[in-house]
Structure formats: C-alpha cells, structure tokens
Length: 610
Image 1: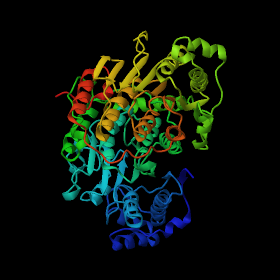
Image 2 (image 1 turned 90 degrees about the horizontal axis):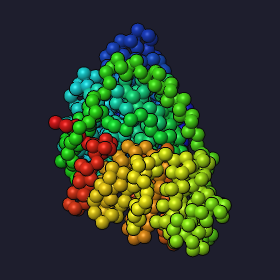
Image 3 (image 1 turned 120 degrees about the vertical axis):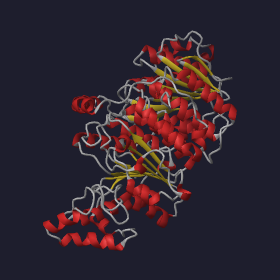
Image 4 (image 1 turned 90 degrees about the vertical axis):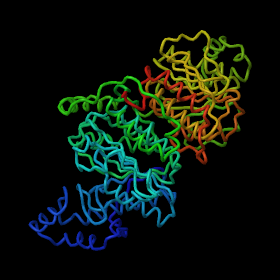
C-alpha cells in the first residue's frame, strides 16, 4: 500500500508515552466531571476547553499517529496522513495548551526512537502558531530536528513567547536543532513559504539526513483562515509535501494540527493527500516573489543557524532590492474569500492525466525492469511528422535515432495534451532530440519551457532568446549568466555542492519562471550519479505541475530507466549518501550566479536590503 489514512477504535489501546502519569490520570478523570468542574479545570490552562469525551478523543489522536508511524516504519505503507483532533503541538509534558491535550507528534517521535531505533527524526511544523510544546520537549535533543514557521509579529501574536523568535536555536547539545522562522507580518503567500523551504529547511534537512519526517500539518497557515491571515493557497501544501518526500526515503507522516476555515482546510488536506499518493501538485498561483518581511525573517534564521549548519554557510549571498512587506490585516481579510473562491475553481482545471508516467526505450528487453505502474509506451508519431523534424539535425537521420525521435514526439504530444503527466525517453542523440522537443513544445501548447541540460548539450544557436525558454546548462565550462534566460554552471563536485546548486539556483529559477513543461536532458559526459539524476528529476516535478520529460543519452539499461520512472511516478529518490562540503570554487560560482540573476529572479533572494 502506498498511503495510509488510519482510524480505528483500537487506537485507544496505544500506550501513552508521556513523562507525567499524574497528568494522564488527571485527564482520565475529566470523563466523570460535570460542566462546572470542567470549566474550572479548563481555566487552569491557556486556551483549553475540556469535555467529557476529550480524554477518549485525545487517546484516539495519539493512537492514530502511532499506528501511522508503525505502518510506515514497518513498510506496510510508504507514507500517510493522520486526520486527528484534538491537535497536539502546543501540549507540554504536564500541561494542556492551545486546544492541545497530548502532543501527538512529539509522542510519535519518541515512539519511533524507542520501538524502531531511529536516530534522526525531522519534525516540520507548518501550522501558523508556534508549536512551543514540541520545542520544549526536544530543545536539548540533537536526534530531533524541529522546524517551525509561525505568525509572530515580533512577539505580539499568541503564544507571545520570546523563544519563538529566530535566535532560539535549542539548548546544550540540541543547539542548532531548533529552527524557528517567525513571520512578522500577515499575508505571507506561496512564494514566501517556498522560499523558506528552499533557503532554510531543505538545506539543513539534507545535511541532517533524517530517517523519518513528521509533519505537524496545521492549515490555519492557509488562505482564508481567520487565525493565520495568510495567503498560501491549497496547492502550495501539495508542493511542500512533494519537497519533503525526497527526504528519509519518502517516509513522511503528516498529522493534522490546526485549521479553522473549512473549505480552505479541506482543499489543503486533499492537496497533501494527492502528493502523498504520488500525484503531481498543480502549478503554484500568484507572483513568485517573496515579500520583504519574509526575506527579513529568512535572513535572520539563516544568520542564527549558520554557525550550526555547513549547508547554510556555503550559500551566503548579498542583498538586492525586494518588494514591499506583506499586506495589512484588513487587506488580507477583505481579499481572502474572493481569492479563495477563484483559486478553488481553478484547481479543477488541472485534472490528473490518465497516465502518470510513461517510458520509451530503444531496446525492448529494457522494459523488463520498469515498475508495473509505469507505462512502457510503444507508440510513435506519424512518419511524415517525424521526418519533418528530423531534417533539422543530421544525427536524427540514422535509423535508431529516427525511431527514438518518433517515440519522443508521440510521448511529448501525450504530455502536452494532458494524457500523460511525465515521461522518460532514451535516445542516441540527446542534443538533437532536445532541440526538436523544445521547438515542438513551443510550436504547440507550451508558452514557457524550462530546459535543464546536463552534459555536453549546448544552447541551440538559432533559438530565439525571447523569454519563452529558460536554459540551465549544468556542466558548463564556467559559471556564466549569458542572459536572464541562459545560465551555465559547472557540474558540482560534491554532495553539498550539488544540493546547493539545486536548492539555491535551479529550483528558485524554475519556480520563478513558472514553466508549462520541463525538459531535462542527460547528454554525453553528463557526470551525474544515478541518485543525483533521480533527485533532480524528482524536484523538477514541482514547477510545471508534474509535466516533465527526461531525455537520456545512454545505453537503455533498465536500472536508469526504472529509477527515473519511479521518481517521476512519485517514489522517493535513492539517498545521495553522506553530506560533503562544497569546495570553494563551487561555492563562489553559485554566489556569482545568484548575484547576477537575483534582480530578475526574485526567488533567488535570501535577504532583504539593509
């Protein structure tokens, strides 16, 4: 089974891994209290409202979370979502807080350590309130990395804690393993959330290398919610989930926290479930430009965390002019309902294609290694159409290359027509085939095409530099921004350099460009290891809503085709191995490119001007 949604009364049998038995006994006793006694007890805590069924429901919530973790770690499912209430991330060892009774995610982390022997667990808290309960429990524990973004407004938003700010990084051995990103204005949107992932969370998470990802999935941080007053749309949470699925071998357990706008909540949850099931998230809406206030917060977090994480120190760059801060409270409140209604209507314009992933091969026996759910496509474009495109390059006149081109054109048409989401195609002439695929796409339905060319693949000399094509050349001779739409980068030499290149350059450019299609080509002497190629393909699913065609010039081995097909189908990529620091020349090349390009591509920015 791929994804679990769990609920059963047996969840009440789960043992509560809580340090204070007196607190558990107190809550058990609430089942027999009358209304006046429940009100009196509730008044002893902050924002807590007890009911005779609270203890039973809270045990169900913990039990559901533990069953999900067990199912994922024992291999019964790849990932899952626990739809539970009451939430948990504010609850402390001996104190209910903020609607939370037991800290479901914190208990799940301890359970994963004690029962399954895990040594590194990442907790991502995207609820709009700071999960101070989780922070207090793990603030001195280097085995749990806790990341939280939250509405803070310089301490003027609940829970009004000084330790919710960016400079609260943990205690003792746990210093650096608490990462707080405070939002100091309302109105943060898709670009702000994505920037926080690309420039803070993911670099640190890859360096940490978790064995399990737990998500405190609160959706009061979504558009329309009266608590959060933020602007992130439902599909954004699908993108965030996809980004987390490349970690920990895809072992992601999301657990419901807050969320008080029912339509926004339900749509956001659906987007998370779709992503967990492997379906690509719809393209992000709205301007891909972080607000000034968001960049100030990102800068403060990176400054506070840089002493603890090599990945952040090797990405430091300079500032440049940015957009104004987020909207005011009244502006957000007035716009949210209309915007949400429009966006929810647009989501239905992106139906899931009938075929998620298809592969075309030049050797029939290579199909034996493909996953069962991946279509081995034998179809080809009409001979006349193929012959017309083949005339552009002498290399395509050869029989094998001509046959492969026909299959590529047929697969490309399926992607552009919405019949296929993504595909992998083997070809003996990657450069020529990439050129044809690009021109064919632009002459049909695609308005903007992102080309990620790895290896000896040059920008076509007569290709119009009209802003419809963004060409990223990885393995160029030197770092060069030949134009805002033609960028060359030497192949990174270490794991850390590769991750910096992808997270700090490729993905910000890709999301900022907002392509209709991504063409990724692995050409001659491309130099990527299979896990690196797989991770790149997996991450490129996001910017174009899953519409990715990977062209590979290599002997059609079932291993490579199978790996690429699996990640495009939604599986987690193989591990990159131990994190290694980027050499100075790679770091300098990356910084140079970002400085050259960030005025045009705002998603590259990691700091606000002084």
